[in-house]
Image 1 (cartoon, chains in turn blue, purple):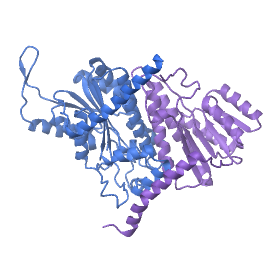
Image 2: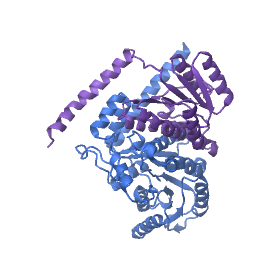
Image 3: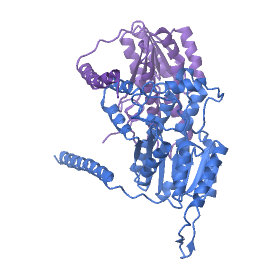
Image 4: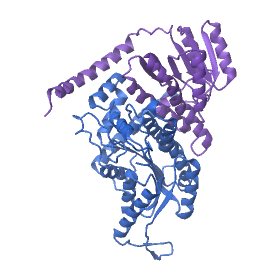
Length: 340
Length: 234
């Protein structure tokens, strides 16, 4: 009987905790929590050369973080670095902070760039070693680098499929393994996975991309459970799932034209702004736009036929076909754009 | 300003959804007619042990014409094959590591020549490394990804074109509930199963246009096979 009582009591406690978490979540909607400071902290951004990576770099720069940009494209990376340096210069002169012996020190943030192909394990580890030596301990890791092959499965060269998986999914293994040990030691850190709404639901034609993004999300969730199990509550994780962003990565993708006003391609700046809010308030997950939450929820409760109905209604099931057709027609002989 | 066609769609949409829900509920309660397997050639990856082995025996029992087993351990494959052959169904086995792309294509060619066209493909082969991220060996992490996820890409590329040509086929993926709900300590497995799940979903949506080719994804919880032996719920 005591055994049954224990389970029953614990069940009530768990139910209460679940309801309380709903209350807290609701409260966060009404009273916006304060954003944490990232001044002076080191932030690594993969795929920092273009698209969302560049905007993340700008946002972190405005908040006076030290930036470490990784990209496979040297020139794009340097351009982002220049942008960041401009932001640092324009900022108000820093108020100094006193170090351990009370001397006033003026902190001037810096940006470091490294050329690194995150799909190559050795490249990630050696670059991470350099970052540790030259910059210091990393607090923020933004796993943002992403590519898409742009071909239907049966027409896609195998190397491109592997590349998509290696950059979008496997790279997260290596970058996390490179920087997590120090975060675990200090019990301080924040890992951000920039996935996609195509990591919450799929669409036809981009099997490799969907597989890699679902994998990234599976990795993210599994890691957060591991950290919770290890009671490392100083290490936060945030999952960013944007819908179609207008960076040109999925140029040509179209949902049904009548629905288009409700689901326009996101302005990249808006997406990054929402993501920054989530990161700085330790929110575990953010979807932009908010309608994605509805789609995700419907997907978990509706039978498959109904989900197909929903996709067809939105024109989402074939939305990538025009994008794939455009990729095929383009005369670019390198069928894949690295980064975005 | 919406034109009448769109208005019709908007009105019809909740009715369609309701209808789908009703249909699904009926399917739960009323047993459906099972399709006849007498003309089907079934290929099961990872068919030597565990779920694959049981599936192979079940397919043979349900009357499949031929059963082909792929796996890495010849001993297990041979044993399963002999067991099935004794029940009267033609059974073949081939040693093939689905994580190795070239091997998959090569063995697929051998299968086509020696046995015939595969009409039911069961992507069941899977491994798990089962350690926390920091304790995991990098090569083992990659191996899991290659077998559980990429292997399915390669087998699909090997067998799907012919199924599309024949307008007859069925692709089955033995996934796992861990693809949707992760646990600590199996990060490689959860990641790979999530990827495989998305792959199947994307493929299923794409194959809706081909009425002859069906897709099924199976997500079991903890099964009492060797793979997750020792795992305990509370």
